[in-house]
Structures are given as structure tokens and as C-alpha cells.
Image (cartoon, rainbow, N blue to C red; front, side, top):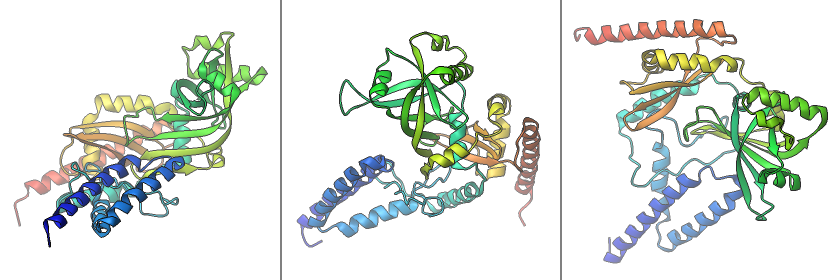
Amino acid sequence: FSSFTDIKMLRVAFGIVVTLAVFGVATAYVPTSFLPLRTHAGRSISSVMQRIGTVSLKRNILSSCRAQASDQMTGAKFEETDPAKNPQSRPGHSVGGPNFKTPDPETVRKQEKIRKHQEACPRPSWAEEIRTIMAQKAAFAVLSTNSQKLAGYPLGSIVGFAVDDQGRPFFSFSTMSAHTQNLLADPRASLCVTEAAFRGAADARVTLVGSVRKVEGEEGDALRKLYLQSHEGAYWASFGDFSIFRMEAVAEVSFVGGFARAGTVTPAEYAAAAPDPLLAFADPVMSHMNQDHVDALKDYVKYLVGVEGDVDTAQMKRLDRLGFDIRIAKGTDSGVLRVPFPAEVRERKGIKEAIVAMSQAAAKAKAESAAAAAAPPA
């Protein structure tokens, strides 16, 4: 460098690059309505970078981070570059900062192996996944309404809901609730629902946006009975000051199924889809596997998926007609892996048959691996 000033400016530039990287992680999935904020902030910082002549340095460092960025445990990418899987060209995370370490070649090899397996796994369509999440029993979610007390501010409320045969969520609301008064004045709202096993960023959530209106008469009475079937202990839903409300017009359906699995389906696609046929049997099957067959789940991950080495924990968290998801952890790393069935399953009996076949395949692969390890070197 020609002078001490050049070195000092480079240090400042690097500090700004780190700030950009952290800012990118925090805003990678900011709603579309906030995109002007992201653009404005990016331009402001970029203008500073240009003034100190380090734009190319910023681009090179962030491009390197993006190229290598993936989940350490499962190899899941933080940016989906396949246009077929990301038709909206949603931006990926700008990964960097003190907690980001570029993986070594051996880790990259392992990640790529798992990634290829996972990308080839069959899954239900997004619309089917969303309808299945929405059809869960005794479900609660966050309803956001437009506050009448503080104009221009949203009010978030945790509410119980069920869905009708078109997937429209409906509710039993007291006239005393603030969200009820908000809806009577302005029916526009959103409902954010998580899958039953939700723990964090690797898990699925869906947001429906639409108009929520009161349903009266015989139709309201019929929906009340359906609500009580889903929420068996909700005796208060029959109180005189409780009324049925439903999201009559679904305007938007957005979905985040985990890293690099985010986008929307049309309201028509959502309405036309159906919940997974195994939904009614999934919970007892998963509970049985998680309580009595953890070693089998670990074998599936190691010998069917191809994870090298042993994992500390493995828990089945979601099951559908094409396979199931397993939440794994090793040390401080964790992630979710897909394990496909040998063939599509649409009834309870077929689940047992598929799991038996998978256990046999894993046992065979395990024996072959042990034999290869015991064999004398050639």
C-alpha cells in the first residue's frame, strides 16, 4: 500500500463489508413491502463504498461468501439459483461476519453429497404442504389486524382456527376482543401459521392474507360445530358473545419451507389442493418412531441419506405420502433431512410396509459398510 491512509481506508472498507453481510442475513426474507428499505439502505452504503474506492473489494468478498454458503449440517443452500425452483428470483442471504467460516474441501464434498440426495427427494407440492399445515388439529396462529386504537399499526393476536373444505381459515371470536373490533371496522388481515413441529428457520410456515368477515345463520352454526371438532375443549365457542368469522377472500398465500424454499402459490392453487392423505395417521406413527426406534432413524440418515459419521439425535418431525423429514443434531449443528419412501403411500398399512422395507435396506447397507471396513487392505 502506498501510505498508512490506504491501509486505514481498507480497514474501514472491511468493516463495512461485514456490516453488509450481517444486514443481508437479517433482511434476506423481508416482506416485499419492505424492499424499498433494503434498496435504500444498500444504495446508501454503496455510495460510501464508492467514495473510498472499494466497490470491487466488497463485491468479491460477498460473492465468495455466497458461492460457499450452505448449512453446515445438511448442506442446504442459503440461495436457490435454479430458476425452476426459484421463479421469482428471490435473493439469497449475504453470508459473512465473524461467525462465518469458509468450509474446507472435505466439508464441501460431504455437503454436496447430501445436497444432491435431498434435491432428488420427492415432495408434495407447495400447495399440498400448505393445505396440510393449515389442516392440523387444535391449531393456533398469529392473526394480524389493523388497529382501530392506534391507527396505522397492526395488532397481533394468537387465535385458534380451523379450515373449511376450501382451506379457508375460520375462527370463534368474542365481541370483547380487540381483534374482533378491528375486523368489524376493517376486514383486511393476515394469518401466520407454523407447522406443528416448528422450532426455527429450518421449519415450515405459511401466511395467508385476505378479508375476514363474520359468518351468521346456518352456515355460521355449521362452522361452529366444525370448530369444536378441531378444538374439542373450546366450550366457550358456544357462548352467546362468541361469533364465527372466516377469511372469505384469500388474496395471497406465501410459504417458507426452510432454507431456499420460499415463495408463493396462487389462491386458486391453494384452494384446489388437498391435505396429505396420511395426515390423520402421521402423529401416532412419528411418536412411535421417536420413542421406540431412534436408532433406526439414525440408520436411515447414515445409510439411506448418506450422512457420514454418527449424529447425536434424530427425530421424525413430518410425515407425508412420499416420505418423512428427520430433525438431526450433532454437537451445536442441527438441520432437517428428507428421507423418501420407496414408493408413494396413501394408507396407514402402507406406512408400516414402507418403513420395514427401509429398515431392511439400511441394515443391508450397514452390514456392507462394516464388512468393507473389516476387510484387509488390498
